[in-house]
Image 1 (spheres, protein in one colour):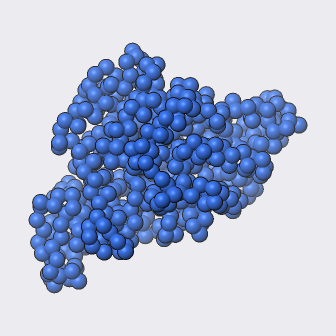
Image 2: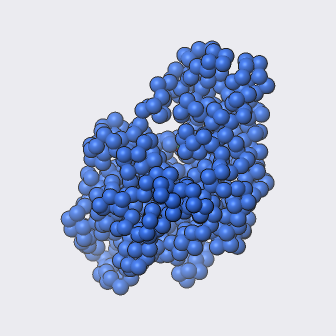
Image 3: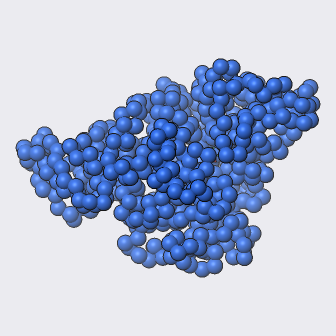
Length: 553
Ligand code: NOJ
């Protein structure tokens, strides 16, 4: 059983798994995955080595934005099950020593939410002030439109009263008015409600946009930080050990502010590192990765980054320069259908041409760079995507369990979207049961990396420093943990040198390791492989194409 109060910084060592309930496993036979389906596959997640599951929104919703348009915060969408099912899932997760966080959508609701229905009903409605209304669409003109492909403006005129309401996402997602103290309290109450059901925390959606102020971008405003501090204080006093993970797709110095002084978020996604991992492979140099990590400020000791390769959205190119965005589109989205808003709607394996060497390499970085890694469901077996589906649905297709009908996801003739069935990624070729029967599969490689990662604290908690050999095709960095007691290794210090070859050719270089003369490195991923002893002389090494090593020194 887990007890989050026992180790209140558990999230620093945790491996997260992002799971779209509709896509995972259909237990009711209606073509939609559901909570009971997830419950039935918890053993699978445990075998893989997952510590914490993150569920995409499960509340009732008209699904204009796949549940990020909530119509009732206190219930479960009927496609997914009931509150009883939810509690059973939380129990099942905890029984297995895992944890579970869920999305909480705080910035906006669905236009079908009773709050908005009341708010729009008249200018004098009791909840009029729960949303942001204006008699002109000219206010907050410095604010960008995020869903560029669908929305022309952040304002929509509502025919009922003739006024405009504010929305940072789809028209059907009106923004809540955080200047209203009742809204602030209502969202806090919703969090209490779910925490009371035993969950371990939240992924907090769309954090930067809570407040609006004239002559600003309406992002990352001081008022937002003030509200987050209020939430955190509440967590610290009422819910110790439960966490808030910020979704703030911003530059590192702006996201840094969301950790506050240990008094805002426990965790935050590091968005800008992600596209740069892909960029580095195409450019055959570590430059972009080094740049962004050098631009990433230090964070408070109990805070933690969350890093990821792919998620349920498009591969966002918001946090790159205009030139870099064009480059990424040219390189990774040659077909127009692959592009969406400022991003690329493709999955990990297809992005990497299904080249297993590159898939493994990026995962080896994901599991050893600073932060807690998040695996997007299906990426552990290298699932494909379907760019013919609208919006981001192409990366949200059914989980591929086996080679039976609908990949073992559902018995119905037509699941919510078709299972991937193409030549390279079709379910008969790419599925869990096939990979579990093949010790050389990606699934085993991933599980092995997770197993090894868990034996050390250096990857989740260790200091980070670059170790940069002359050859720029090689990325190297130190992860060093100097804890008091490290029972797993019997030593006090864990020191890793991670070395990766970003190219498809062998690369040689050398590095000064003289301070460790006399020691012999071991790659903890492949301990049978031998490495030369370190001497006073420069340490010369050669890396095979796309090789990665976690060298314990
Ligand atoms: C971020 C979520 O990841 C995305 O899927 C959603 O559309 C927006 N927030 C709006 O809630």
